[in-house]
Amino acid sequence: MKFIPVIGKDKKPLMPTIPSRARRWIKEGKATPFWKKGIFCVRLNKELSNEKLQKVVVGIDPGSRREAFTIKSKSHTYANILSDAVYWVKHNLDTRRMMRRTRRRRKTPCRKPRFNNKPKKVFLSPSTKARWDIKLRVCKWIIGIYPITDFIVEDIKAKTKGKKKWDCIFSPLQVGKTWFYKELERLGNLSLKRGYETKALRDKLDLEKSSDKKAEIFESHNIDSWVLANEIEQGHEAPDNKELLRLVPLRNYRRQLHMFQPSKRNMRRRVGGTISLGLKRGSIGKHMNYGLVFIGGYCRNRISLHEPRAHKRISQSAKLEDIHILTNNSWRIIDLGEKDGYYRL
Image (cartoon, rainbow, N blue to C red; front, side, top):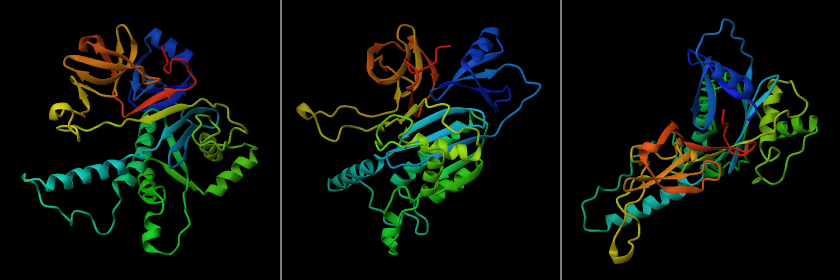
């Protein structure tokens, strides 16, 4: 990541700066370092006499498994984010439905099934809502650390057949986009481009897109988001920054009384939960011996720690008093351009 987000004393986002200048501000006491959901930022301790803000655009390329975000102004490309889509909600709902129907067959007190709990006019299924909600949460997170003015999205439009059922459920990306666009218009100016228009913009700049959709490279998805952002703020004929930030949403398993299947001796052990000895799982902290760590589960009075980049467990016996929490997290952020994955200013 070539630029560090800057927040003013009034908590408003300012134009990003380079790491060397941020390092000098911290050393001289002009700024205070902090973390914002996996991104290293600095907060100014004094008010600026002249705050010149440029127009900053976010280009968004939605996808079924991966989606891309590019934060760009006329002079620089500040960040390229490659995010995973939330695709596991439907399977979790099926499992919950199966277990609920199983409990109703037992001779235990339970509520009766309710068939009138869904709205009749406008209904957005939980799996589709989760797919679009993660995009909106990323946009709100970006607005908190960058002075965003515009959004430009590649509009998704699949082929319709004129049949009501097919036209409503044929694509998880098509359904719910209207809700997403309305929410995005509240955050800034919104522009839409069709898929063939995005391709025309790539061909105009003589840029090629990779056919490997699972590759963690700029040409896989972020080339489209960069082209869209560059369409509003035309300042480059080729990408000036191809470094990627990988965003992996966390799958927190909610608290359950016991496992679905009993273990040996017909015993059911505890499972799930989002809190480990008072610390939120997924948070980024600093351990006195291991440095930057990722908070995992716990056993008795010890916490499990993971390495932030590879998410490999490095300890199962960490003490609570040896950990200093830096920021809470809803996802894991991996800087593919850095060796350790995080800045150490």
